[in-house]
Length: 542
Ligand code: G6P
Ligand code: ZN
Image (tube, rainbow, N blue to C red; front, side, top):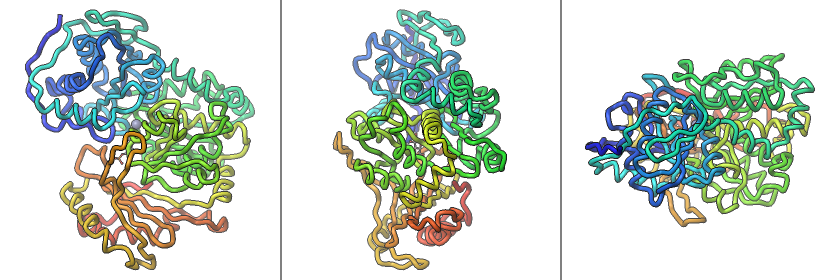
């Protein structure tokens, strides 16, 4: 029986860069998740009898939320729900399953790389039939609906046993509990040369993959250890935990320090990799050599043809605006286009659907391709393994050769977390107001060539997205970007992205922060960061 429940709107159910993300305690309020899901269903058309994919990253409140979603999907008239066993589906696996089963869409329960547990964050996002994040007109419509909602509909039914594979029913709707790894692993086997990677491991190649107690543990265990023969113990923190073991499941040098320390030791493994809460981010480290996400994108683009799924070459590259220009240089050499999009994976969707881009990447540790419509952590790791298996060089050698061929884009990101929102807004507003005055000024030895506020004109649907970050370009080719994070849940996070191109191979081995020291100082001065935020140093440097 369908129960119609009276409700009143909650403020602020506005999906951000990647879905609705709030503290667990916010989601636990009675009707909170129901309101959002009803707002979502009310914004969609013609899904009667269709298939919905449901799964999450296993964080605290995942199972409770999934039960609500399933019962509401039944009440809304979906014909079938495919849900990952244990409520588990990584974000890229969900995208894969949506596409493979030609589902209407999918609901992913995740707050990505944000901390989990009772006092951590929770999130919910909707992906459309192409497997990608809902575009802005959909998320805007959901938000509008949540402002006026008066009731929601939910099926009165027992909870589904999420731990038993197979089919049950909720009302008239079929619920199929599926193996969360199977479809995804099969796709990876089609894209990459698993035999070559097996040979690589058999030859003594060693690796550590840090699943950060999050969703990729089961995927990495099945693919790396069981299928590809990596030695047992290759996957560390492999069991998904509701609180991620109290850690911050974000693969970067701060939060995956244990892995990085291992890789920086002389007898460390050949390759280190990590993924985030929901499995879409990745970090790649060779012995003694951290690979920046921007460089990783460029190197993947330059070598993708070594993997069977990309042997015909790539049609184009897409990168988010703050990502370094390293990929642009590869595109130029390959004679393909490099698209520059706003931050947020959803902006790649149209380019991928139209076949204009094959590989995409973001400085925020996201890399992927047209195989799904999300960034994909394990995909990037397998791509690196495939490249290493064919080239039989170390990660450090591959990176060095790449810089020699293309030059090096020194790159770093400085984050100022949890700053006062009003102060952060004022800082950005002030920068925007000064855009016309900056060109021609000389700061700390560098001359500003031009400055703007990035706007994106989507070549496929013609949509325009403005105010995506203040860019300051210098006459020597260096670039500074200021933008506010769209994913934080407390105060504002100011991100500053710094980049300088170095063509001279004799100068490719500098420490990144040293190489960018002048620019760092300029970035602080131009925006008067200390004066406006009271912060003299960034919270996180990556
Ligand atoms: C999420 C999105 C990414 C995006 C990132 C930016 O992870 O999936 O596509 O790059 O957020 O986060 P920010 O905090 O910089 O807005
Ligand atoms: Zn993520």
